[in-house]
Length: 245
Image (cartoon, rainbow, N blue to C red):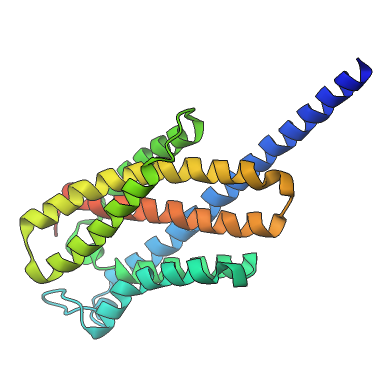
């Protein structure tokens, strides 16, 4: 009986330690993501609200990207794949620095929104996105339902969105633009819940190994995943909620 009570105490202590570690892990993810969003917002505002700086990337009249603008537009996509490939060779601090650099480049790539949409509508859309993101992420964290099966469908949807968006750059079809925006909101709403649950499950699977270096890198990659969900949902919602200048 004494051995049973000792085992129960040990199990309870281990469970409490995992729960505390999970909270710290998720807090690091959300904290890192929030810093990334702040960097993106500041860079986008600084460049987008300054005609001289924005003209380095885009035509000041039509706002069409120049050569450097095209490079900056696709740079975040390239950096995401680069970070995924390099994360095992980077330290946790190196991965975090790479993420913040990525966030700054993302700010450059979306800076044009401050020249197209009113500041009030951008702020309102950001708040709507934040509320939606918080609700979806909370649901993904607390639900007992296994939504891992959503992953392949949602990733296929993202690939389809990227292809359709690139094609529509040349076609300029309002119908395709509208369809992409609607589907984009739905896909990244789903990804917010899916990624949150996946991050929680990944932690629970690796927590007992005590691999602090892996957990540090995983937190940065988790922040990147949720950051991308937030930014993309915001950009798609802005197409509906944004008031043009």
